[in-house]
Image (tube, rainbow, N blue to C red; front, side, top):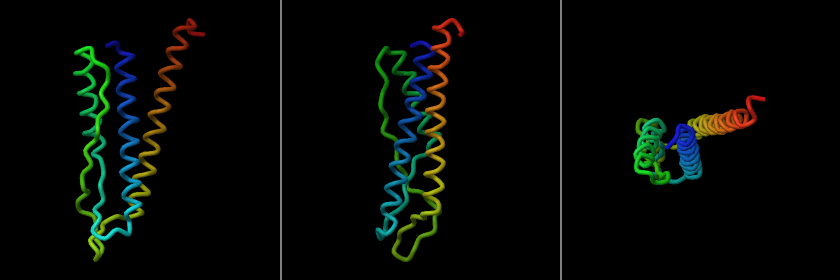
Length: 125
């Protein structure tokens, strides 16, 4: 696969992971009042590394990209309420804001990539 495909594949994985993380955070927020519910999250960095590694293996084989299902893990070390629930809306709001910024960065990188391609096609003008 060429460098452009590799970059776009990586950015696609990045956007898929931010979407998955946003869904996990939304589920946490929706379960704030569910007794015994434990906060779940994605280890974004390790999941992105896994996605990039698997995408490079797939591209060497000539196969199309792979859609990964990230691993959700319970977040340890959070304060539990007496009902066993450990969801903090403050934490989840912060994580949601961070994830939305990450998504916006990914979109901007894709726009920049295509803008560069368009400039190359138009001879730099």
